[in-house]
Amino acid sequence: MKHAFVAALGLTILAVPLSEAKTSERQKKMLDQQMLKLDLGTRVEQRCDAGAGGVVSREHKGFQVEQVIAYAFSDPEIRGTEVIAPGAIVRSRGKWYRLSFRCRTTADGTGIELFEHSLGAEVPGWTIDRIAR
Image 1: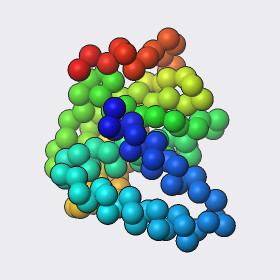
Image 2: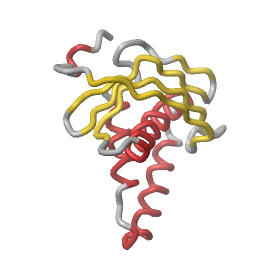
Image 3: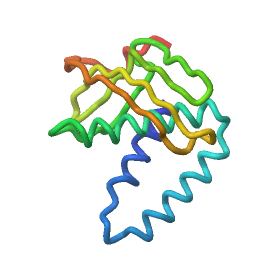
Image 4: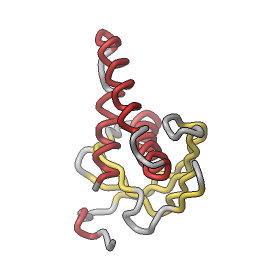
């Protein structure tokens, strides 16, 4: 659940209108400061979840990502600053879709250096309750 919150928070910051650029910069700095308080593995995973939401929203017409869960169908593999999430899921406009992604962050885990993804089919009737953790 922690992953979904940060992803949603990251998307909110990305959605701030340009007229509020100064506020947005302050919010980004505050978020980065909070992220640096997390251990590197958690920081990398959360940054990649947020990045996944932003990329899917930008690159897939009609998508407005509300939530990303990297571990929905299988646990992601975390190798240093890289996350490989073959069993992720993304919610857009109340519908869930399969997602797999590979993401590599900067050394401090606050920026994204590489992001590759594949958006799959809708998963009708899927709910968060189905996560077997």
